[in-house]
Image (tube, rainbow, N blue to C red; front, side, top):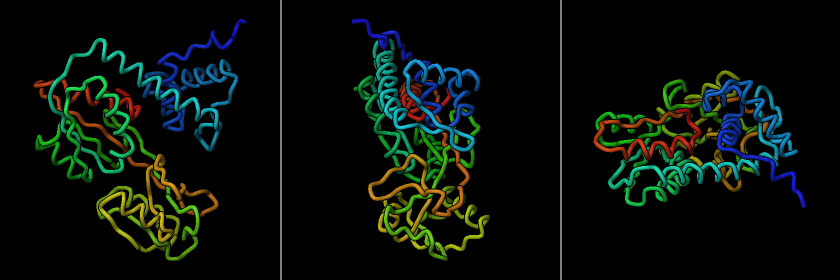
Length: 289
């Protein structure tokens, strides 16, 4: 029996555009990441929806969000792209042997690193990856001092090479979140954190009184207070935790300005390992090369 679905092709270029649009929530923002125009990405997504007979995106404000069916395709797309890139590296890449020193804030390590590490280890099983978690300011200092080869840091905004915007949102407990309490109790990272700065600026612009109820240098401490329903706090939009959710419009909390996420790679010519490891991180973060 002839199956029309056999004519559908989910090529890597198409899937990269789809993933970039899903991650950024915008065809316009996705376009430079996949080296296409906004109209080209929009046409790709329309064709993909037509070929699959499914609505993958829905409009929300000035951007787009995945539908439930789009979310299913997203999970497969990430896996397909990972396998595609892993196969290319395994067949054509150098056989690396050595060490790479990588630094990232704790929340980035738990969110982005597992997938990249898994694929990198499959392609380069003889490379040791040493991971250092710290705040972005100290990581930049270690990188400049030559103590780290690759770092992932939070920046005030995107725009530099190997960077992209990172949207922020309020995380609240599913039940009993103190969103109506005044002053609003907050769980925040310590002074110097850009999440903290942007969240406080948003509240001040909105005229919402607040108090810092819980402070922590780690994501674990911040999330514990939020999960207990004792406070609310800013997180990146991809953050998930059982018993918590991102704030909804009816919660009355103001929008938080995004920050930037940036990848830095030491290129001293001594070894190709840092560049190779960074390539896997770029794929995980859908960063433009």
